[in-house]
Image (cartoon, rainbow, N blue to C red; front, side, top):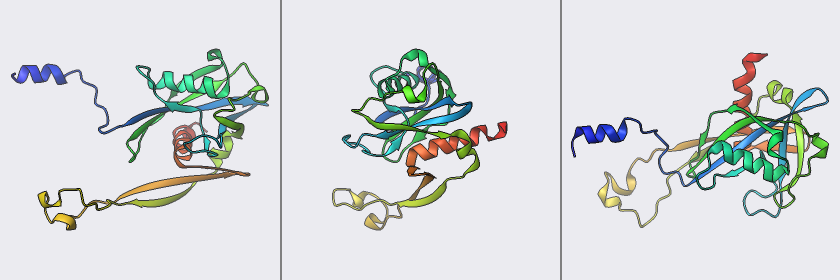
Length: 206
C-alpha cells in the first residue's frame, strides 16, 4: 500500500456519522385544508412498544438499501393509508444525530388528491391524526428545556488505562427538549425540534 492507494480510497468517499445503530426518516406532511396550509400529525397507537400514545410525524426505520427519502414515503403511505401519487416531496431539512445512536432525516412534502377527513390511518400504528395550521408554528415559539447528559460509572470500564482513573473529567452533554402546546395536544421532543427547524427555515418567506 502507498499514498496513492489511500487517496483513491478517500477521494470520492462520502462522510457519514460514526456509531449510528439505527437510521430513521420522517415526513412533515403539508395539506391544504379550506384554503389554509396545515401540518398533519399522528397520535401513535397506545399498543406500540416504542413511544405509544405520543405525537409524531409519519416515518420509521430505513429498510435494506432504500434511501432516507424512500423510507419516508413508504412509511407515510403505510401509516396514512394513502397512495404514492398523493405524496410530493418538496425537500429535506437538517437531520438529527441523537445521543442514543440514531440518525433521523426529515423531509417536507405535500399531501394532495385526498381530503384530510377522508384519510383513514393504519390503526395498528396510528390512533388518529389531526392537523395544526402552519401559521401556529410561525407565530409561536416552542418552550425549551435542557437535560444534562452524564457519563455513568460502571465497574467493567478499564479506568486504569486513562488519566485520573475514575476521577477522569468526563464531558457533560446537554439535550434541548422543545414543547408546543396546541389545544389538548402536546407536541414535543424530536417532532417539535424538526417542526421548529422547518419554521426557522421558511420564516424569511413572510
